[in-house]
Amino acid sequence: MRFPLSLVLACWGIMLLSQQGHTAQHALLIGVDYQDCQLAPQAASACPTPLYGPRHDVAALKRLRVEQYQFPASHITTLLNAAATRDAILTALRALQHHTVPGDGLFPLL
Image 1 (cartoon, rainbow, N blue to C red):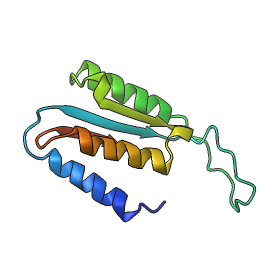
Image 2: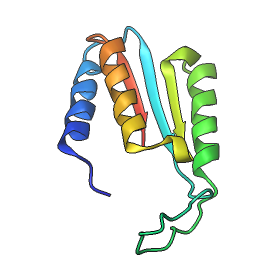
Image 3: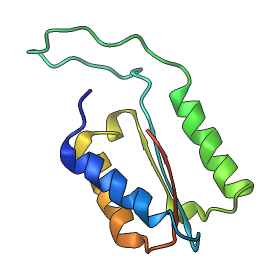
Image 4: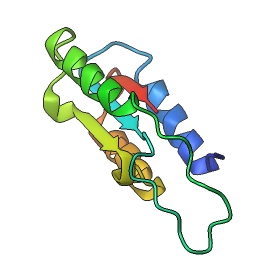
């Protein structure tokens, strides 16, 4: 999958915010396991082989971040399967851009 330049620049900008000190912690966790894959009628290829880990990985990392690293649960955004669309990912990155300040920490998992 190719990422648009705006997504790359947004990630880079957010990572720059996290390089100073850590005043607040934020996480963006995205997991797609292809369990719900449905092809559009005009699609030329088959659905990818289903994965069985991403949903559990996202849940485990969220729990780890909250319990061990004291991330506020409200600072963790999760996008799973059908909710992990291009628009939803870009919206989540824009929200992070508006809710973070220099010195905040960011943990992205794509």
